Image (tube, rainbow, N blue to C red; front, side):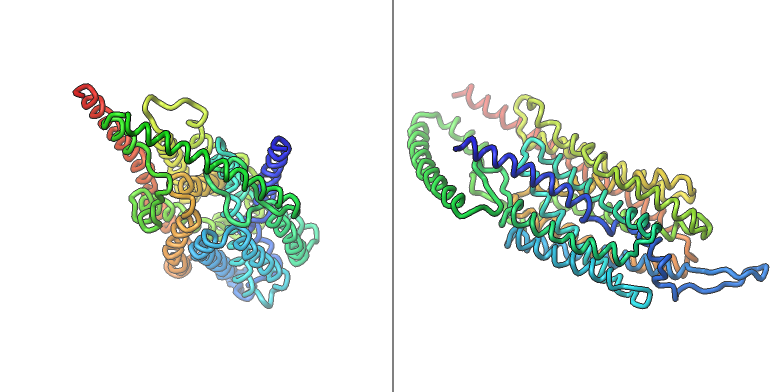
Length: 514
């Protein structure tokens, strides 16, 4: 019976993992493929009223659509702001009401976003603002609820989270497929109507392959989730009841034996036991987690990295158009290449997670705790991500068109490593009961910084005459501050190790004197 249940659980967990990967790959990060989508929307005439005929020096008449590019940049900036601002309330809702209720909100926003795209046209271009905001927020909800699937696979926890992050990033390539379909005569309304009908996939997965609450960590031995028939639930309840009785008996026996041992052990041994075995029920408060130096340095890292990514994604079409000297064929070529590179996000994702999970497959150093080993691995992974961010900023700041191929690659790998690293760090460093709130508060505070994007876009449009070079240079200098977080993690790990060794030395000396 137990072997049968164990096999069924294993199949269910793998189905949850694979279906979550498919969901993340095709539905979560569609709007992050904005460059390809903007090309399609331009062809269809969205915001075309902002284009104007300009007479050149040789009395030649050309069309200037720089204001149209600015409008699309504003749509992207508004969507990013709304998504990041909503992450805190979504995190609180997720922690208090669980996975099913949170995903139902995500499904509702997904349907609203796709239907608004279906109903939009050149005369109602303004519908792009709520459409993109709803779609990008629904994708974040799906990604946040899928990240906990890593708890089902303990040894590969960070790897699963990072693969989902890579799939989330690769899903932006869906807009590349939308662009190819559009070139073959499939309207954007038909495409988004089909995507709207796909919401039934999200609903079925929510009911059958996801928990009503949250997936705990560490995972209980006989943990079950998802919808099941009444007979199975009744049998499960009887098994749970029997297990509870056995557990109570075992705990009572263990308490009696521990009490007996406490009378026999020396004061020194008892002191060491109390200091090094924290209480199981003791959980840090949400306030103490937010005000800890670990979280505050992580917050700075999150803000700067997201700001760099958002500035680039909001202005990439504007920059490519300028570098290509308004040649739409060249811009279309580069957005196609960008779309292909985005597909490889899911392939590149395990690079960062390998660094974070590798210590689990090796024996710990003498006296080293698993938490210390995890911090050491995380500091190295974050240094790797910060280096990517710096190189990415340097590349997109250089006004060299062929260099943008490398920029595309660095953007994809940096985005993948960043989101996977962020979710992994929050889940392994702080209590799982605060996962949604802490993950959300970091992203929501970033939304306040992203308000600067609107001022920067106005600066580029009016003062800098459409040239974002100086803004890019400032962003590159900001990216240097991302290295503060991995350095702090490394120093924190060293302090913990030093403190542990000092305590062990004290115990040895006290033991010798006794």
